[in-house]
Image: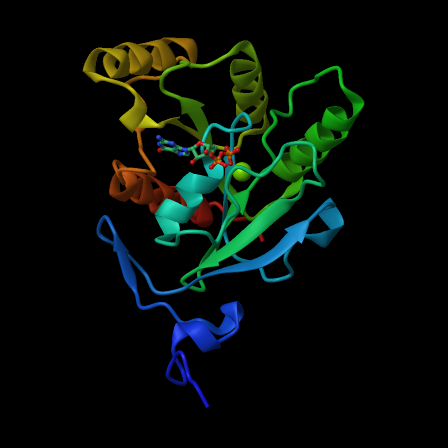
Length: 227
Ligand SMILES: Nc1nc2c(ncn2[C@@H]2O[C@H](COP(=O)(O)OP(=O)(O)O)[C@@H](O)[C@H]2O)c(=O)[nH]1
Ligand SMILES: [Mg+2]
């Protein structure tokens, strides 16, 4: 008999039982990160009550890649998935303590196409009603600096009272002057007090800083919890 991998190694275990060793992302230690469920309705969110941080932005802006990078995993979140397929809110549990939520790549501002409207309504309902949602990371490609749909969407989220952190993505794709220009443009367009945090999932820039912001949002907004 030819064994091509000794028992208990990655090669002969089904993917779900593969155990990762803890990973440091910045100074945050990821002990566990797992996909819990995909929801297509507000009635089917995870039953477990844990704080949630959601990621939103236009399709292709790098949401899924960023979530993988933050969780120190390569392909826990599907990257570059074809837009238009059945789309869901995907919940990932980190360190058994909270959920990171991958939202479909649309804003929830009113748009013409009816399918997008449906999805937009679902996202809007989620943001308005989910008490466990402690904050939302809104990604904007640093080279594009924010489109009208981004600005409308962020305004709509802010109006619900949900804290929004604007983050510039794909920092590795911009040179020094493009980066400076992009950050300035995002700051102005979204009315920020200071330049947004910028990240690169590819080069792992800005991830520790983003974790700081996320953990802070979870703690701060958990104190105001009404249930
Ligand atoms: N160079 C570079 N490419 C990125 C980065 N993040 C994502 N991408 C690429 O951008 C594409 C869309 O990424 P994805 O994470 O699926 O975006 P989503 O649609 O917002 O979830 C993929 O081809 C990624 O490999 C990054 O930080 N740098
Ligand atoms: Mg995605």
